Image (cartoon, rainbow, N blue to C red):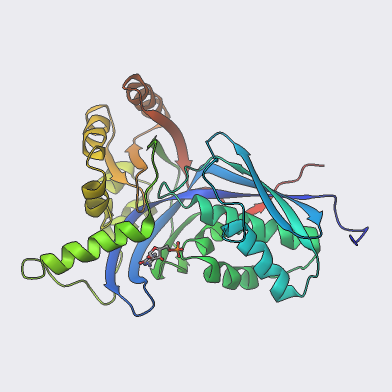
Length: 312
Ligand code: C5P
């Protein structure tokens, strides 16, 4: 039975992210690596609508092809809903409709955004009234990037990337994304990094126990200075991602020759994020990449984390 005082449905929205800095430390016993990362939430969103139901289901709509996505219990949105139900003692289920705009397996945390928006939507639909701290604790159980999709803004992530502290960021940064037609598996990219480190152990420094975010990045964010940030962008997963998908080299070069201050692989890739000085340059770069047959999107950051969208 559905509680008559519940809203008819709840709608929440959560953003995708770019890691403007990502340093990968040592592999831990739990299969995760110690990280130091600076996240920025950007204006590409996942919208989750949650409807009362007796069991748990999910379906997809949106601007991208979702045919390959799982809709069973392995889907992260369903896992999020089940986890909240279990923790809160809610007995019913939910029918989730996910409107996807963040590239799938693209390194921008689309699945994590689904999970964060689902937690917020189900909390409202079911009236579970969980605090932000409680939702964040559940988010961390679902995946390393889920707490950030909940908090949004600009933040430093340590541990698995799930221990967040807010970073001061001034103004708005303009990005152009080059979205690939294929996805990449995050565990595979991390494994490629580990293999490379093992094979070249004699030539490279050992991975740090506790990596840290460079102060240049923090300063650039604080100053709201895109040129300074462009100099400080860094991603340890870029080299392994480029080894697995060498075609991305050419697109990085194209972006940098077409007006980007700098380009970087987003998270574990294959989405590329180009930082540009302003909105006009973003449009020019989008047109230039589009003319080469690439799917290019303009976004800005930082934006808010997962929250309800009022529809009535
Ligand atoms: O937590 P999430 O499901 O997003 O992580 C996906 C995979 O990425 C993990 O199973 C692990 O292989 C890798 N990962 C990692 N170290 C991290 C975060 C993710 O090795 N800090």
